[in-house]
Image 1 (cartoon, rainbow, N blue to C red):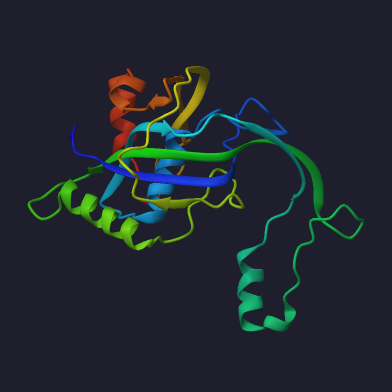
Image 2 (cartoon, one colour):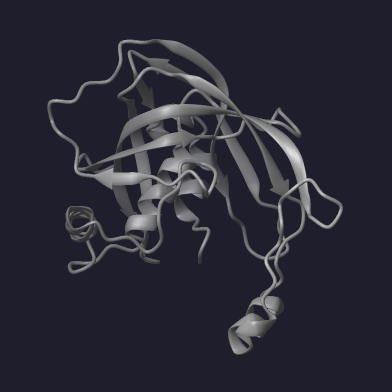
Length: 236
């Protein structure tokens, strides 16, 4: 695998990467998951010819939790309703998330992280590289977009409402000295062809001196699973 990689700093007031073992109430992992980091990179620069492979996540601020009580919507907005609102803006009716009888909200508790900052290190895995279609091409493209503050959509720190700021990191920034055994963490999802079940891949995560090692060669020891994961794309 390529040794060259990109680095981007992301930060925000709140973050929540929900542990799947908690059913109704949201409880965040102590650190960003590799799949969440990949989605942040995709929000900045995504191309169908490649996928980002996250190798390390550096935690720049101490892990601190905060409990948040809020109302969450239970229903989804249908695409047909959106098209109707676009053609007839006067017909738009927002979904209310209050706790009254005429609203769709249900009170939920979230144990989120607060005041977070990370450095993501990753490299582009090109599915079918050519002389013109190389990892260096996508790394340069990514760095240009970060420098200009460009993105396809605003990156989020777990929940969509927890928006992330992103920038090129200051090389003087160091991870926190904390070592935290996180336990079983979601690495990513293998998206398979239509009619086949997608597969969630987990790994044993340890925040070692503020660094989460997510390189697939070490996080996923099964070579067959690793190859299948790197070959797939959620948007193919």
